[in-house]
Length: 531
Image (cartoon, rainbow, N blue to C red; front, top):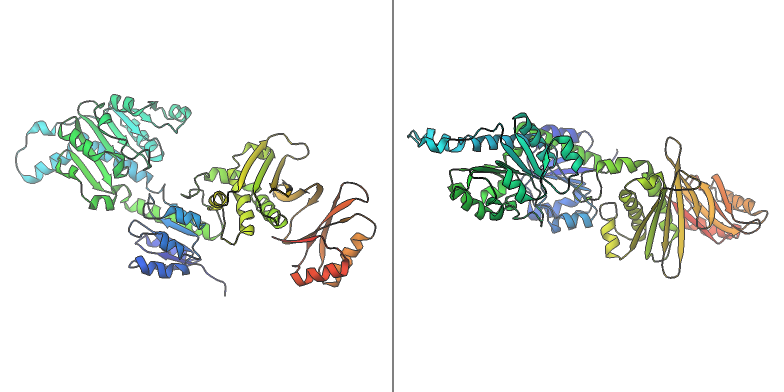
């Protein structure tokens, strides 16, 4: 009976998503579990699926011996100790794209509600009392200027919808290239003051960071046109709430709408005192369509991780995206093999590693490949669980010096990747390439020896003096041990000089077999490598 990995779901998600995972995994849904109970049981699970209520802190992660991925069905990761998860090599993923349409539609809905005074009008009609009609005078959207703060995926969809409504769109986002503004037909503003000054309506779509916390404040509100509107689906702390309260109360801002997350909404807000302000409890993800998409997206991420794939949108892989991973993937197996063989050869303490990319591979963003190599080296040279999630962090802790060198020119191969490692007293180098339409890894050189060799699960490397009869002695000794040699590769500099032999073997050579081989053959300088 084959082993099935276990997944724990601690909150309500779409049933289709759970059924999708049950085809290949054991899925436990325990909506009552939290705190110490979660700490006790988490060691049994390979994946954890949560929403906003479950807190995954350092204590939970410390006990998560088998956990490979924490998946949040929703945006944000405030309830996850991402650093502790990263240190332990656990992927953290969320559903960043599943509610994009829903969020952009809510933005437009809130803009319309503010512009047409829907909030005030509804209260007036419900009260059954006559209302001062001047309070209900709104604005037409067509022909007005929308200013978008943060031109990410949601901001982009909001811009498209605004164009369809006949609006002029400006945006501020220092991380988006001019070409994208031009392609979308959006006019760029180089600072927030300019954007707030020209806009009739402001729509905020910023992630919460140290730099964005409190960035929307009185100084910007004072720049706005009279009777302007501001709408935000960002985290609560992005906007200075006291300054917004004062600006609305003083009639500087005509109306505002904020979609809080559920936890934020529960804390209350003095903005609720103002009839010109609309507050919603995280409606951006509260459609059946968005919730279904969120659950299915998260389920696919979990399934992919448990099947050994790399999630391109992991929160704790900020250096990588799916495009970079896909472009680099032809070299993935080669880099895994290079890192593993290098670490097994380099038995001494490693102080610095240089990774050199030559040829077409040097045109890629190689951070992913470098991290793959480092993760394999550290996996073998430490007693910790190391993968691409925590490899860079462990390098920093161990003060391992890392250097990348690139050169698009290469003499003999279209692509060449070389690892050079050293400490004060020792250094070695290993290089390889890929060949054919299947991108087959090949080792090209080990130290000073050129050796053309396809790696295999079991290998042996011997250094010896190149004189007649050596190959026969090696083959005879392995034959007596019942070890079949599948392929043999020899590299040497000069005739009768030192040589390096690489052997592809059909079975593993144990420590006892290695000792017997040395006794039978007389060869002492032999290294057994297993991939």
